[in-house]
Image 1: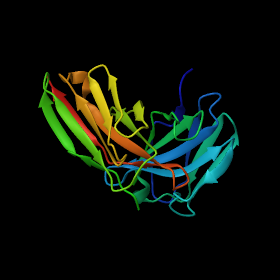
Image 2: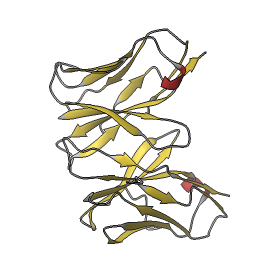
Image 3: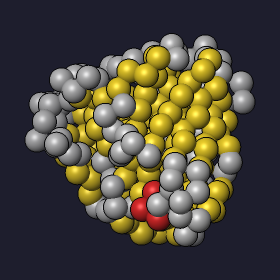
Image 4: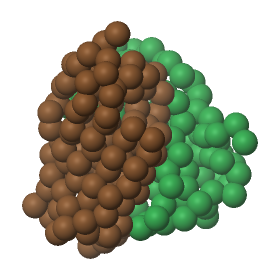
Length: 115
Length: 112
């Protein structure tokens, strides 16, 4: 398996523009997670899905953020409009099961810079 | 908000040295995971500890879960340059919709 695939790897955009990040989870993994990582706050869970259904989106910062999972092999995280404080590395991760023995496999991340 | 505190925040050592990094909380966790993250990559799971007092070994890495399941340590023997990276701990909070609580990590640099 190719692992969790994220695109783009790097995105530089200007404030106010729409940003769409994409993720392809590992086939057969029922859980998909979107995280944001910054130096100051570390890894923050934004939202997670189980069988394509959003389960917990309490970590989504505000209405500018939205996430979808139209099928088992694809998810998007959209920011509209983007702001400089959204600059971070965004990770997608998938897991075949929930805790306590979940095994999160992370993608390589999408580094977002909002000017 | 529950926190996992990791120490030290930064560590720079010479190849061949031993080191221990810590992950502490005032809360009890059902399980705790350790990840290593290299620059430009996502975190990679190293180990999961579940039972209080549990010790797990992964080659030169030894992981221990505290008896009260509130803390954990990672000991590396004879560090190698390939051990360089960010070490993250994450606790499974059974009372918070089974979310993982993450520490900020220990950034380890092993110099040749």
